[in-house]
Length: 247
Picture 1 (cartoon, helix red, strand yellow):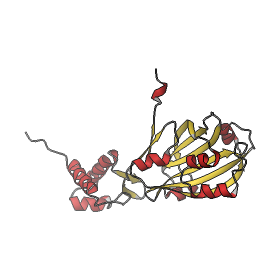
Picture 2 (cartoon, rainbow, N blue to C red):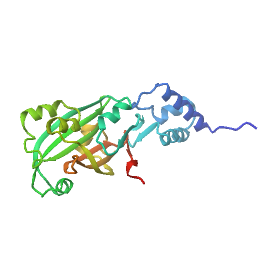
Picture 3 (spheres, rainbow, N blue to C red):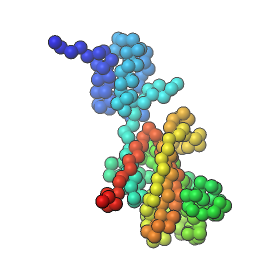
Picture 4 (tube, helix red, strand yellow):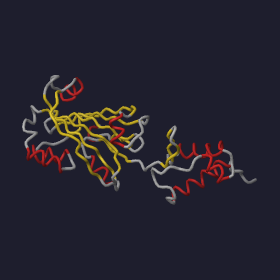
């Protein structure tokens, strides 16, 4: 006996084929449920079931009050011992660039002082950048560097290198000859803040992945406390195990 495939699954199959053929590009909005219902000659409930199936499969994302959009391809960022963000994305075929937002001296608050293991009020350098993948904004990165460790951080020649260098790791090695090793990373989910939403071209009610990292040099000295806000719909954070430590 031939199996009868539910109508909503048949519609989902047809929509999935269109997505595979790039009839709709990533980020593009789909026609409304009413229009789709007319096209497929079904009711809106059936369309809603088909969209729900494709959303669960990761093909679509639904924004309340805005509509249904084609989900963009997820970027997988491996978090291991080395801080190698640019290299990780490039190996997946993404073009990476950063836009420097600001460089300034600030006083360490409680979170910064804990991350850098310094006293509250100590002076630190803040470097904030907007990260792009294929010209799409995907993260806002705030790096805090202790000025007791880098007293000449704001030297004009150093700032010039920092403005043109894509990689913080390469900047630290080129200017200070120190390595850039990840000691710890804590990840949490929360709603995007309004200022970051504008930079990330993101809706205010959307989630981000907040990654707080403590990075050290080859001697184990803390050299950076980093706070990165990733678009939750675009990034997948993957934690690598250091197999050299297993017995």
